[in-house]
Length: 261
Image (tube, one colour):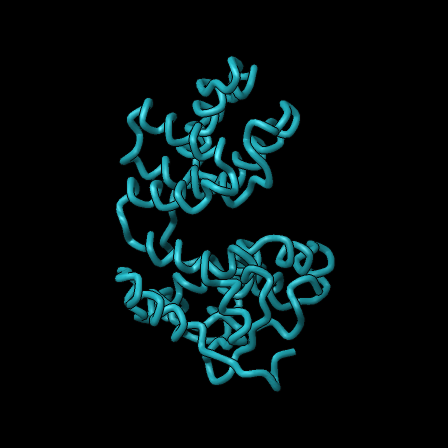
């Protein structure tokens, strides 16, 4: 609980840091949404926050915990991919020196510094690893590749396979296997109105608690932000006339319990 502790506006904190860092983050509504996405993806770095009158508040004590990650995010905000890579490598060079060194050599050798997949892969790697990439055994790398096939773009996944297969450390390649990521199927986008039967089924799934239990919707929403976002997005479209751009402007609601609960 932070009710009786001095609180500060997370947006104000980011805006002040942006000025000091000369960041391209401008504090506009769309930028606020990007800030919240960054915090959500990183589970708010373990800090507690509350919402009052549409503003998310944190304690002054927790600002210290956000200083390094926010500095990196703000410094890289809207910067070219090459600069994002350099910033991330410098930031994590003390934590994962070998991984950062090998990745820097890889992107230069493969001439992919300016490709979006290069910085996106590095961002994904540094957010997921908990030790040097050279310390992962083959089984762990296989699991890592499996997760990447689900959560990363096909371009990032293929670049990751190339990184593992062509990078040497102490005379050995990072992996003995060549991971292959197939092209993913994409459904044709349909902009027509839904048939009334499909519309009714969607409404039943979204609002009926029996269906929540049957399909495990609560569990899916807890385990996956994508499921949670889809559920609330569809629900809001049923109960109010909102466009996609309106949805983006709605501030993220504060949870009534801590994240573990």
